[in-house]
Length: 261
Image (cartoon, rainbow, N blue to C red; front, side):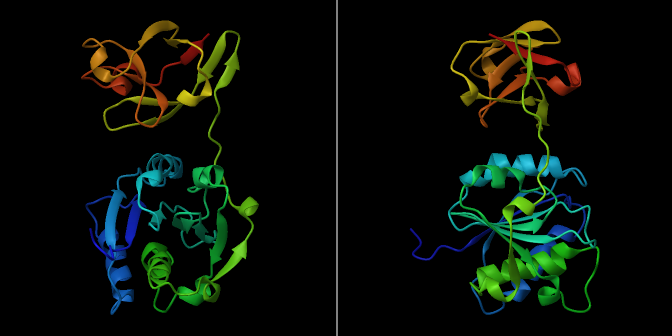
């Protein structure tokens, strides 16, 4: 066991892997840390669809709990870069989150009871020359470096109200006559349709319908037959629609999904 394991910086962006942007952000952090211990970088994903803040918020929700205490999450899906949108530092009981105030941290705010919000003061961190289109490199990376140095945040942030932060609207299950109509929150790499019905919502048995046709609720993907449309609770505790060894999104598109009791 390491006596002093490196601090962890986890990156979530829409930069992709073809271009230099993700690497440059890491390089800028290391440049700012010259003479200090370097962190361990973890790439959560750089394949968020461009400007898809909702998908980034969901990926962050699915992931952050599995990182060691003290992890800094640098989240850059920032269609408003260079505008008056605020730059944020959000601190919870275990983690720090750095990124734009555009709803990316919606679920962090919902799920943490002890979060504190700070605006990163651009005039304190931006140094000339800087780009109005690459705050990931010129604003957020230096902020992460200051956190890694354990510098006082009072020198480069100001406290703001959590209630003032932008939060995105993620639909709740819609009540219908016999149960609920569900929304598809996320489609994963395998084409599984991940809905907004959480396993914790009820212990009552229920039936699942896809385009008004009942499908089996199974325990795991292998319980379904080849080509069968099935329902199951996936690793995130959310109800999924899947087709074993196939893609539900390709076969079904975005179907109507309902449950009844």
